[in-house]
Structure formats: structure tokens, C-alpha cells
Amino acid sequence: MSLYVLEGLRPWVIQRVSAVYMVLFTAYAVFSFFSAESIAHESWKNWLYSPFNTTVVGIFVIALLFHTWIGMRDVVLDYIHNIMLRIFILAMLLGVLIGSGLWVFRILLLSVVG
Amino acid sequence: MIDNRPVYLNLIKIRLPVAGMVSLAHRGTGILLFLALPFAVYLLDLSLESQQAFETVQQILQQPILIVVQFLLLWSLAHHFFAGIRFLLIDAEIGVDKSPARTGAWLVFLAGAMTSFVIVLGIAL
Image (cartoon, rainbow over the protein chains, first blue to last red):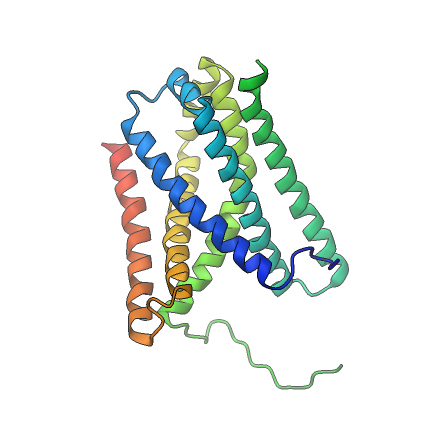
């Protein structure tokens, strides 16, 4: 297995598939925003915690995390040449992304738990 | 391997074509959006916690300094969005030739600026 896990054509494909999903999700999110009756805590919570929206937001978060990982990884590989510094920054990056991801999934699943 | 090729990289003297500017800005805005991610998740969490916390989020976002940051992030998102669509179209072999590629690049800058401007106007009014 390579140091950066994703090699060859795969990151290229993931980057584009996630981009297309996020474009479609953005269209849906904008539509939802304009068809909302009010911008308030209760309606916002009801929107997010409907099963359909929790699902599409969950998939969006997964797409976003992969997209961000590949994009930021490419930036690091392009500009950081010192191997130890590179590994350190990539590890930090992964930590931030996994941390943010777990945090969002905790938020999304709270509606299911209680 | 020792590389002795002469390198002349005076960044101020490099004049990028508009397509290069779109590409560079796509990269820069992507980094900005990544940096904003943890804060966005924090605000998402807070906005769902309670009615009071939701109002706190609204107050936080109305801070003058944060309005500037939000505008920068809004433009970043819009530019990254349209530049990304342009790259997807180029992958699909649409707009690859020099002239349409240049037009597309200008359109990306225009669409990014227009979108963020219209959203700001919509919020202000």
C-alpha cells in the first residue's frame, strides 16, 4: 500500500464523483432554503432531522471529506518537499478531517438516538 | 540527484493567463474552505442545540469582522463551485480549445463575483 493510500486514477475519479454529488446537493440545498417557510431554530432542526435530509447531508459530508482530503493532499505534495514535515502535515490534515467528520455524524445521529 | 538547472522564478514577474488565474484561485479558495470547515461544524452543532444557541449563532455571524470573513468564504465557495464545474466540463472535452477555455475562465470569475454579490444583496435587503 502506498504512503498516501490513494494512487493513480482513483483519486482523480473520487474527486470528480464527489464534485458532481456536491453540485447536485448544493442545488437541492438552495432549493430547500428558498422553499422554507421560515428561518428559525425549529424549522431548521426539522429540515435536517427528516430521514431523507439526514441521509443526503450524510452522503454530502462523506463526499466533502474525500474531496477535501484529495485536494489538500495534492497541495501538500506539491509544495512541501521535506518528507518528515510532509508526513506531519498530512497527519494533521487527516486528524482535522476525521475529527470534523465524526463531529458531524454525532450531530446527525443525535436525532436518531434522542 | 543534484539538479543544477538554472531556475528563475520571480513570482511578481510571472503573468498568468486568465485560465491560470482561475486554476490558482481554485486552489487558494479550496484551502480557505478547508480552513473554515471546523468552524462551520462548530456553528452547525451550536445552531441545533437550542433556540438560544441558534440565536447565538445569528449574533456571532453578525460580528463586523466575521462579516468580512463570511464574504471572503462566500466568494471562495462560489468561485470554487464554478471553477470546478468548468474543470468537469473540460474533462468532458467541452471548452478545451484556447478561445472557449478563455471565455469559460472569464465566465467563472464573473459568475463567482456575481453570485456572492447577489447573495450579499439578498441578505442586506
